[in-house]
Image (cartoon, rainbow, N blue to C red; front, side, top):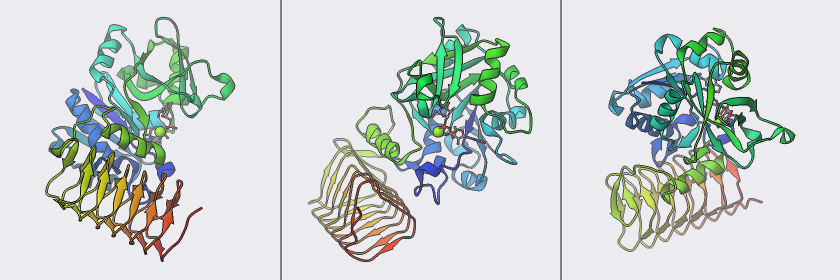
Length: 370
Ligand code: GDD
Ligand code: MG
């Protein structure tokens, strides 16, 4: 079975984390998000995947190659210009045969794909859309069904007064190839505002597949942090790759952990990371590869990418650090702060409440954010 993953977006809402890294390549528990997605697809019987990218195809090729390392066939296809969600699939139509899975590339879910495929076949559906309940559908595509789960209305980014259900498009579709005849070639065209409303008019069978699988859009800094916490506390099925050296403490390769350091799981520690004397690492926390955590540092609820240098007595809480930062002694970073890559902070800086720091920022000492 084949699948297309849509990975064209710019990831602007996740800046500064996406300043240097395309959104699908940002790490999820120390593994590029898209790689985790590919492994999940492979494990559920999808062995050939087309990545529909819009830019930076070479970055994807450098990380993923032809997919053989992951045990699958992978095609990385760059669009000549943004074609929209359906136009992007039309652009790779020549590679498709039979029913095809299509995925939004920015969704974290443990949806059962084989169950969805069985449902699609049972209903002789031409388009099946996975659905998930959310509190606020205004940021999503609202999907209304009749009592037989046939889709009867699709409304992208509904206004509050148009909300009739909490079920939204969860960004996984199964589509029969003949349906692509409705998509005009070589143009910008969307599933959400183009193809789905058209299919409602033509009367081809379009069904919703509602599930309570774990589901979240990783496209915002707070959800990026929340997804990590959810994975670590076991809310979503996830195969940790390291060795479990203590209760819910996984180490991915060699790490140097001082005996007086206190590590309370769930914690994942990347290869080559050093944790010095008296440091406290409290889960849910992920430390990237080759990080250095100085003496008596306190980390809780953190996501650190690779190559960070955390000095003595630093406190870090519920925040994200990109790659290659140096945090000076006794600094304090908390409450959803998002630090880009390659920043250099002197001693005793205090950064809080969702502050975003752009890559390469240099701070002297004792700066305070408001
Ligand atoms: N190749 C390619 N080309 N990919 C694209 C393009 C394009 O022109 N435009 C968007 N994408 C990719 C994005 O990278 C993302 O993975 C996916 O298509 C969806 O686009 P978003 O920009 O993230 O859309 P959204 O989050 O506002 O809404 C979509 O997702 C919701 C679920 O998260 C819609 O499908 C909603 O209906 C849905 O509820
Ligand atoms: Mg999205």
